[in-house]
Length: 409
Image 1 (cartoon, rainbow, N blue to C red):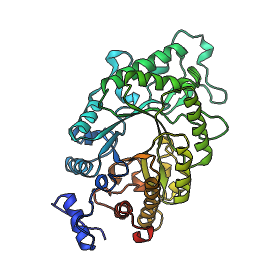
Image 2: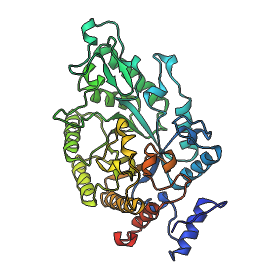
Image 3: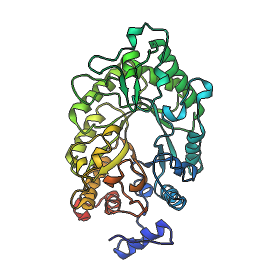
Image 4: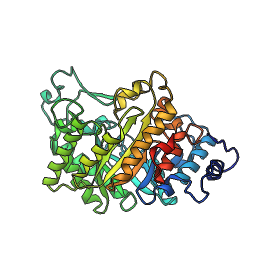
């Protein structure tokens, strides 16, 4: 049953729902309370939520009233936050040099977390996407070094950018990386507790271990180790995380494990594994998620579920990916039949697996509700666009109490 709660606060609405369904009134009514003994329950927030204004910075149209409801839901349900976009290089340092930083949005994000006593995550320092072209530009190399890789045409497609100019040297790019990491991590030292230091560096397909990015081409494979070393110097007490998607796929998972083992052998300070977990109502099963977590646990590091959502769109059932370029296509075709019940079952599988594995220390939903999600048409989250709980929310809450899956049906 979906209970509408106009003009009363959200927690009171959940309490009323509990009473109507015969549940004990002393049961937890928020995610952060329900999973308190297991892990942080977090959410990615956009600039609207961080600033309290309907600025539409992330191409999400929310009225001021909707933004205030979103903020209230974040405060009520979650105890950890991640920034959806405002700490990515493109946003926080769009231009070179010390005057090229734009700290306003990131400051607002961090201050929101501090005011509300939340565990704050920084996302992300080094990525193949959303990095401005100036980072890779250079003038001290011979012209032939600016040529595109074989088979890619007259330029290098870099996320949403097309860059075919002269490239910087390895030393130049390392210095730009170091300066950026020292400045950003140093600014929020002691406030941001976890950093996604390197994001999505493992290749999706083929036999190559690493993605063919400009970071790899200019610096070489040790760009990952260098990024972690710089971040650790900047804040020795921060938890440094490697983050990637598609780890439900055994082939990609084993690539990631090979990378982490190599970094560990070099004593690189990688301290946690981030599994994004952008999945669908069709997969993974409980057994598949259980196996993924079992494999990752063999690395001996904490596991963070960093960008959780469950896509209900028909096209989103073809595979699980966190790739930005594929996001629009993955929400086409309308919703699958019985999407809400299937989504509830999928979330039940996932949360049961997370609870089983004590190495899971943090679970972050990638957006507070369907209306602000990057996969909005797939309606992938626990709350609808009006911040009302969906069947999946109640299922997740029952999982937290230890009830068997059949209790969800």
